[in-house]
Length: 145
Image (cartoon, rainbow, N blue to C red; front, side):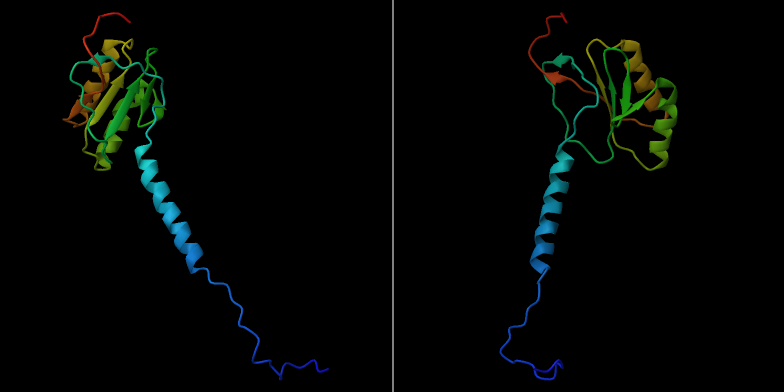
């Protein structure tokens, strides 16, 4: 019995691990995750949107800004909590980054009308011209909450 490796058995199969299929599966799963993650856009606040008889929700865009206002007038700016005093800075920062898409205001039906108008005014002051108010589709409004 020799300890040297000079004598190789030619009949031994070559053993190696092929990781290409593993990488392929991982990339496919990553792509599926990225595609489905863009469709999941949950609201950070619980909102009861007002109804409108002809409500058409536009397709979300990458450069869209969404401001949400709940019934207690708490706000989020693209999902992050914000106070009214910081709205001007947030809109100007988005404008400086080249964002020119629409600003969608999602206000709860019980939110103060003045707060919604203030958000729209600040957005217009920052140079955003396309302002949208989100509603949910419904029949005739009965005027009750």
